[in-house]
Image (cartoon, rainbow, N blue to C red; front, side, top):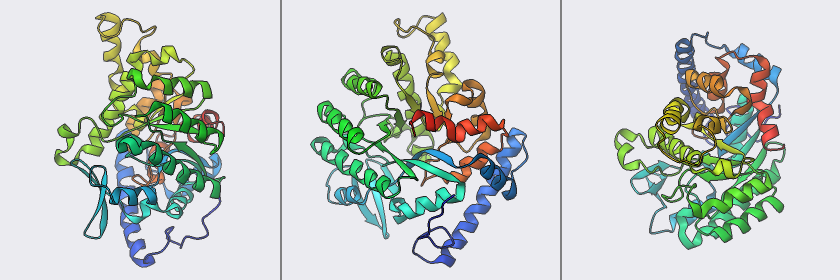
Length: 381
């Protein structure tokens, strides 16, 4: 595995190595304790550092299907805005504001060297790179420009590190004509391997009829669509106790994926490659209720050709969840062919997801599919 020669021994660039090392030691202790507790919950032994290294070597480089960087040009643009989304500085820290949702943007959220170091530490060979939210749809008439800036940013990083990254594009879906033009540019000129589709588009859901041309074009191009949470529609209900990310984003995954299934999009475009993050939110756990409602009580759409659970089995899920029991449930529900390793870095360290999944001790062939082979096939790497 290649290492990033520009990083110091701590895996970071710049700053104070001693201070950073202390922070990293505390984080590593917390992560080991978390993993030990999680492994105990699933009835598996905690994994030692030696065992993790041996397993990583045996399976080769991983492919991370969800990882993000903030784009400095877009952050600077938001610093000049007077309406959401805006960026301001508080106590020396940049803050992203979208209504009542405030998030920090520390400098390492913009640092590709930090990401490379995290990849190296976890044995990640290649990463699907995208910006995070806010997406272009939050910028009104400036959306096409924002999309172009974001996609050029990702493409430049991929061009500098072609063996480490591949790109996912974002689109200004408030202007479908501009979105389809930008999509063609991203595929033909920038070599993008997929589309990051937000679970809601400034409050509108992607299954609504106005967005249907996107699904048609993605199917035609054989290009994966990866759902990703945006500012959640349930934010008013979850902002108390700082649950916006922990619950709100998962509810957005669940609602968006369910609506896509119930809308008939997967009947209209059976060849569509759809990926949902975070183990599909809550949907795998409640899909039986949707089956009962539609198949037995005859509630909901009348034009679906199959039970909702059959459509769910055609979707890929990434395994971003620090809970082995949730991973195990998804594995038993979907099998190994529809799961993808991902980290959601920089918010989650790739090592945490890798080690949590390793605690399940799945058959080597299935682990290789989930860690590497499924992504190679899906993204045609």
